[in-house]
Image 1 (cartoon, rainbow, N blue to C red):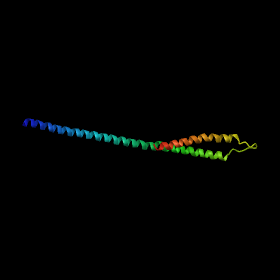
Image 2: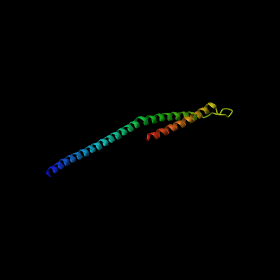
Image 3: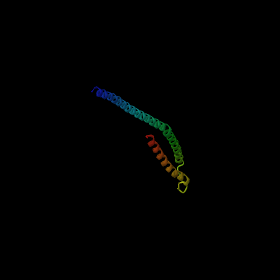
Image 4: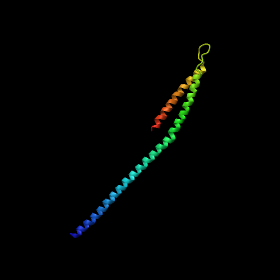
Length: 121
């Protein structure tokens, strides 16, 4: 009787030790996963901040520079409004420059819109 009880106690201590070891392992696993998650989120945040630093600002400055350039050319074409000559026709060269400006403006506004929408991601 005593022998079986002793055997049972030994088994109990082993089982108890084993269960604590399993729990410890599980705890370690959870800790490891949390650490990985923390590192991943930190890395993601770093990448996003770098993206914001590197990508968005230069795009904006470039488009702004282009915009001012276009604005100055717009003013130039406005100053040189198609002058009507003696026959009442507008001079072709000035009209042509005005026509050329419009698609460029469209492209500029599309580029600006894209830059702004990308800035939010």
